[in-house]
Image (cartoon, rainbow, N blue to C red; front, side):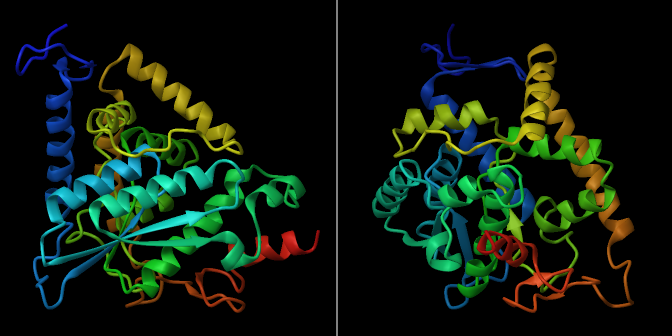
Length: 326
């Protein structure tokens, strides 16, 4: 099998396009798609200047996706005075897992000379995921706790650093799974929120002062290609899977989409193309459907921690109270 671009030995066959790539041309293909997504979403504020740069916080876990994202963004914008980047790593308190990935994060940040911050559940919330999993006061999957805590820290620290955007390494497989889950749950309002939160181009999203807006520049690239990209570039990556990972429903969706892609190459891209168009329509229909002039109806501050929530007490604080009561 030869590379379509140069005739060298190919390391990957992209069945959805029919292309065969050697390592170097796989690298170029991935970078081209990420740059196109950055451009199409309008990631860089056109009004950014060296005196008033666009400030980005990148969620850096040490896994392949966040490592690839951080590296590509540094390649493109690392010497651009209009952009200021900060890598944020979260330590959940999982023995034998997160310590190794933190090492990868530190190594990468040092290699790129990028500012790097490390925060932990233990310092911020007084809990470690190993203990939460053992006690499990809510009788639910570890990922359900962890997702709430991680999201809270990402949002709060992005706000604390006065970030203009929060960037995460979600890939095509991740986003296709989320799209299918929202469809199957019939959650049209969540589809609408997805557009304004992280999918839509920045000049098409609804205005909000509640959360730092997110972006997902890797969302056009399949997971396998990101793994190969990291291998080709010999990037410091922690490939181990979290020992507590257990999302039964998402796992079923993942298996379904994998089977669809095997039998119908391009299924993931088709899912996302339709989903993004429908999410834009849903956002137009639901946006500002509360009080006149209120872009975020029903959102207030948590009475315990001050985080934004639609209830008196946010989900994070309710989970922490349940954990403390054990």
